[in-house]
Image (cartoon, rainbow, N blue to C red; front, top):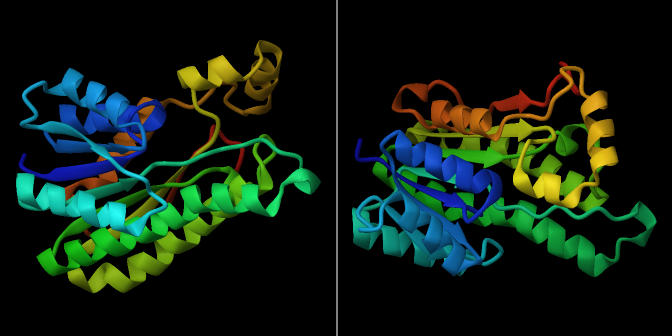
Length: 246
């Protein structure tokens, strides 16, 4: 495979899992993150030569940062084929305590980042006549959220709608745009930040009685990014353990 994928927020967490899975599937991967050192460390663990994996400094709230990333990938690998808008920030805050500044910050990372990334790379893909954009949404964006702040839930709801808007805009140009919306995931950061008794309560609330697999979410991303997935666009794939059934 010669396809190139940029994964945002790939230095850790779900983004790292997606980057590792895509690299294992044969993609050349660029790991974009605010933490360049951490992104490069993951890239080095995949391919120290840099021939098939690199880290990039990327602030997803800044459109010019996406433009710089695209230029770097054009210079290095001749362009990009897949964008995974994974970077996000979740902050638990009481609804009436969220300041306008905090609201703007969370929405900028989760929603504006998806918007400007899709603008920059969507135009690039359309020009090439092929592209895949996969957005990472959230159950919170569908249900309003219970364990996350209102700003995060609202932003992820916006990601689901942006998915449809960009899918419609880019469909005639060989570009698909889809979303994956996980529920609670079995990630190290979850175990580090959520008290054990709270985590047990979350598990019991999930119909399947377990946290979701980040590796499975990565497999869904791979399916949606495949060359053969050209007829799938504007979709939102649930992976929430039965917390939302529709």
